[in-house]
Image 1 (cartoon, rainbow, N blue to C red):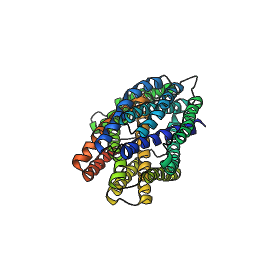
Image 2 (image 1 turned 90 degrees about the vertical axis):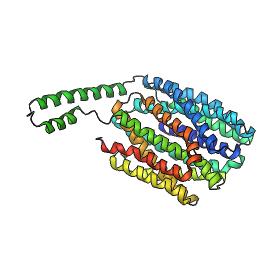
Image 3 (image 1 turned 120 degrees about the vertical axis):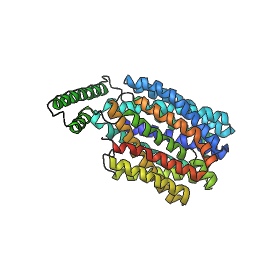
Image 4 (image 1 turned 90 degrees about the horizontal axis):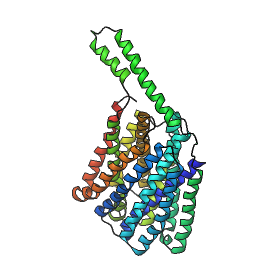
Length: 400
């Protein structure tokens, strides 16, 4: 039950994130550079928030971060309304910072709840389930918003929506599980360290009985038994390239749809909503375990092809929705795989550190996205984006 509420809360944050960017482009006439700076400010606010929420996560706390997120969200809602009504960039910047704080604590709280509530062998399954629910609810919410966009910022209408949104956020604080005995991550770390230690000992005993003249065979066995899995450095590099590439795509995308492709605001919102809805439908037929080298490679290639299709082909609303859905699905597979590799390597500790690296990379992407598109042009930016999205494929060469 709580997973559905958590998925709805994360979906609501996703909807608000898009609406802030649409208000910036449509109502406040932001340029790509200004849009990049707006998103960079969001990321800059996320990083310290994630550091604090990580401390709460390491303590096994789930309700406290979600409560902090709710309080920040309750302040964000009225500021966002006023920024759109008064056409105030300053208020929009402030509101977006509060949105970043909300996102940090709510996401970390939900991730921690998964790690503390389920056995370690089910972490990947429930993390994927949470992501799926967020995609489904976000798609439905966006489709609903696209139908009422023209009256969304009428006072009575916005107040009514705000009441339901805040009620859902408050419900998450009440239902998110807070285990009284927080031992799942601790046991997993102990088990992992014991396995590594025993593996090393067994490996050295085996090597001691071999013919040392066969150096190649010794090296193979040392690598086999001493190997700890994918290095954190490689995971961090893949994550950084993935997130920077995402920012080069998603940060200026509302500007591309509205200014360069000439789409109306309700159509843009519907486009995102249809993409999410189609993406969720496809997720239902995906195999239970998407964490594999084959799925990871295919996702990277599909994402690159879909990005090129949207930018260069500039198809109609329906086709754009399908391509956007392909990007969402690919992102889910790539993000889930990198996150699962990180959690496995660290035995579930420092969940917030993963988010900090991700958001620091996003900060670089958002700060430079507007300048890159302005200076290099859209076509060259897409080429750079393609290169960045192929970097995570370096993980395929490793054993996992």
